[in-house]
Image (cartoon, rainbow, N blue to C red; front, side, top):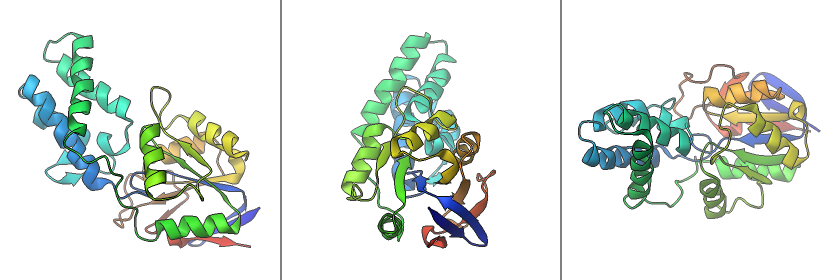
Length: 243
């Protein structure tokens, strides 16, 4: 058991820490923005007039990405369904709309690099320090399982990360079942596990699972979209392990 110190707050009896990926460990803003732009453009070619509406729904304004927007915090499945709903509003049948949205995702992948984005500065070192101290670590992301695996492999994090959870067709954040399943895989109790994330979905999920605590991180030094966090930080090295 460890005591985790985060600013002026202490979390005693901690066994594990679960991290979100996008916006927490991975600086994926540029990738997500380009992905959303490409999806909107591909759909607009088949259903003219939707691009600006889709971009707004995704949380994209020019090259600016809303950290609380759909493309930033939603699963791929949720983005597909939202896009399909806009398409269906034009009068197209639902399954046709869903097929157009799914195809747009595939087409967008041809124009956007699938190479994982860089990690935020100091993130890898923080994971290394936590792991060497004896904490169990995991990643719990709304990204697809294969994207989480690619991120871990690309950055050589397998020696630190003991469980990887992504979202495909099943439940997504803020469903607490994701947190509970991750804890079960790690062999730890939720009440002895911390969640570190950059969205209100991370906080709601951990709170519903009765986690030991929720640490909200915003590398841009803003505090919005982190309601429910016990403490807010701007760098991962603000989390300290006390013996």
